[in-house]
Image (cartoon, rainbow, N blue to C red; front, top):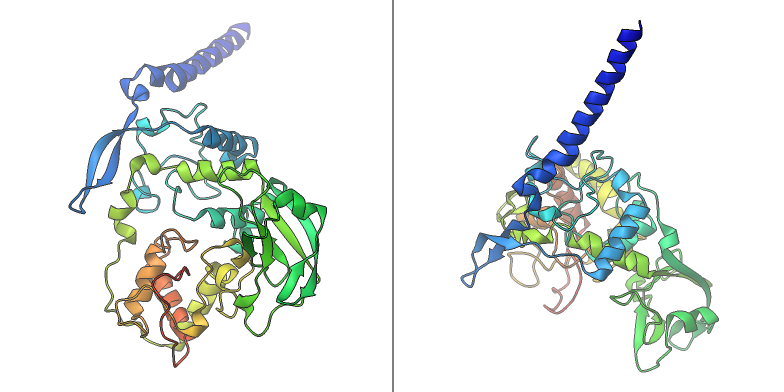
Length: 388
């Protein structure tokens, strides 16, 4: 009996030692573990995308702070950072991970649980504003999300409003002096949502105060502005600004890989989507699941998340679409809408939706068609900054 016990203890010690060697020491002995170069997609002077070997860049001090916040808040519990060469993961997330991408990652944050999406290639997929809305309340931009909110990463102040000569104006309170310099020569436009939630866009470094005087703008609501007696100002802290900077860094060492990412490269514009009642009903469901937080229940661009977003979400009810193959002032084709839904709109909060099956994307495109007016307004000028 004693010999069996000794054997079990010895076997346990052996296997623990073997695991430490195989998973700890052996990988560090491989030359690949010390690699600092990755395959990077770059655009040449001729406009072509070419893959080259490129030295990975280290994190900036701000990104290092953001990484520390990412670890502290337990983001790696649910999000992995490793695109594996199995199960066609490269068709969901992008190029398979390379060792050089993790040259400056200590400790490593590979993780294994994918309760949330993998973040290896999340950098620049969404705008900074989308991330701020997502951390305030994930359901604003991803209604089906189970991620908790991180409101403690925002500063908050309830400020009364009064009716002024040009509309609603903020009452002078100590909070305004903390967040703004109140420089009257520099108006800072704020867009409350229908509940009074008002996002204040931070400095790139997250420092306060912001130079300027806050001005409430309710023009997106047209003739039906909300009746507000106060607004809740929410300002990202320096920690949150750094966290978003870190997330935006992820995957950027691989360069312009999105330009040659096949699942989201849809070039077609001549495409007909049949106007069936079933497809429209399915589109309603897809819209409610993925789009309502930004574009609103009416499709007018006044979703609860719109206060965070600049450029603001597209107002579908006016029938004006910026990205299309048709002449100016006319409606886009179904293929144009399908392409926009698939590829998203770079530098706006409109992300790519290539992960959704093509049938679901077609139904969402049909939903956008149904939101258009029969007599569309002339298209906006090229300088107008509105998404979709």
